[in-house]
Image (cartoon, rainbow, N blue to C red; front, top):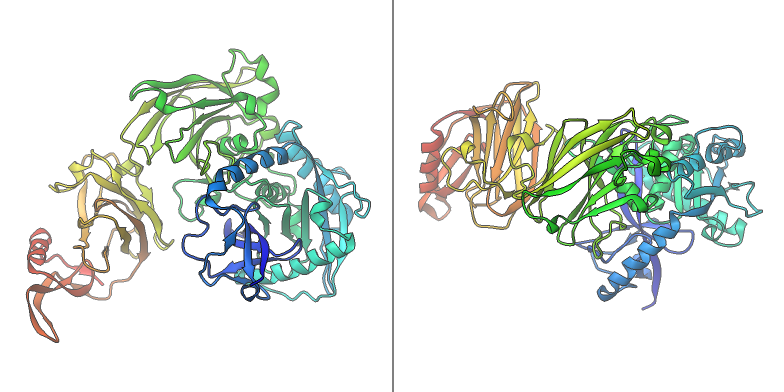
Length: 633
């Protein structure tokens, strides 16, 4: 059977309200990119499928007009498992070349039968290269943030007019208004790409390092999208004019993922506002900011001032690092720093660790003088290490863990190894030229993410499931009401809605054979010594293997909860509900079509608001613990 090769790409679409969607696609030829559907379980097979690197081979039957149906089957790949390391090393070398030197840009203005890109070719050129006086543009941002190491220039190809080309298509554009209509944008984009290649007489990727297509309005409520580790980015009309959006999308082409922040489940993937790979802004000439420590490390522009620290080289309780950092914005002043700075980006990593941690001084001056978060503060950022090598070149989301000023401290760590670190900001001097910050980092052990109430992971009522996992923590016994097994715990917190009624639903993968407990407490603060139990639930190791709490809480009050079930992980969701009827913990004879079941009792639980048969001794134990306290359904 004939196989058609295609280049696997990850499409990242930005939507309004800082939302986004990632879709795996494949480039059939140099022009046509189609999304996959019905992906096989386990995709993208950690370490096997890499956007912009991996080639898949497809049968003709799998290729449809607007998608590629894999039918849940694994396609053939160009790289076998034993060549993964070689491919990753090639990827690192390619990325280093892509983030240095002169890189050519070709922007495409589109004219359809009934609509055209709003900006003229001159306006597009000014927004990209500042040819008509625009001071803050794509070329300026990359040149400034890299201190001249990465320069965006117009493609010199004579078929483009100083970097801009206009493409006319024999196509009407209708007014798509729904988010799910991103397929329509892809359809129009594929028409434009094919026509562009016809005009050029060769693939556009041969003409420029980056191709930026500005589609006329009407293809949907998306803002922009790009393909990871590729040359193509696409903009929804006027969003092409926003410099922050341009830099963000080209960042995806440079293999950068998003910059998020732990703690807000509704917007966390974008929430690092100190980095251009975080929130997008509607401003034409701003914000004037660059990249966070993790992204700057990946780009490699300040490599001579990177500091590498392996925590396994010191013992628990020992000083891991103590020194002075200057900001990325003061790169050119590093040699004149007084006292002499030790570096700019500190990286804590080891081949034994799942994640790497980055510490940098977010100096709010010069090329970064409009940073929107953590200005003139020490920033701690986390991201997953590369799959094969101990580098962090391979793409991964970064997460801002903390931003600290003088006298502040933060404890963070790696769940895969149990290593913990305490960082203290010991000095901050903004009057010096350049300004500097000094930090001290001590290695600890027994790291427990969400392992105590003050590390609780906040969940938003109505926001959907939040991923959780349990880890070993030894300081939770005081909350557990006499339970003997309280060492595997994750804490969460939530604010009760106006109705007060909340349903907490825990859905987990069973990895051990211990019952799962979920507890909710009322307390004046996370570090209070007076935690009052207000609700609890247990799964009893019976299907559907989850625990549910549903009851009335005090509106507007913050509650702290934990769940503990041995070696399990899963999700927890909180939804608002309304009281319909009250029930109590009651027991009845457990009967089936085969008659009474000895040793089992039908149990009506006020926690689960349902009836099911469970072993009588469990029902008795539950009633003895909780009595006939009423809840709501």
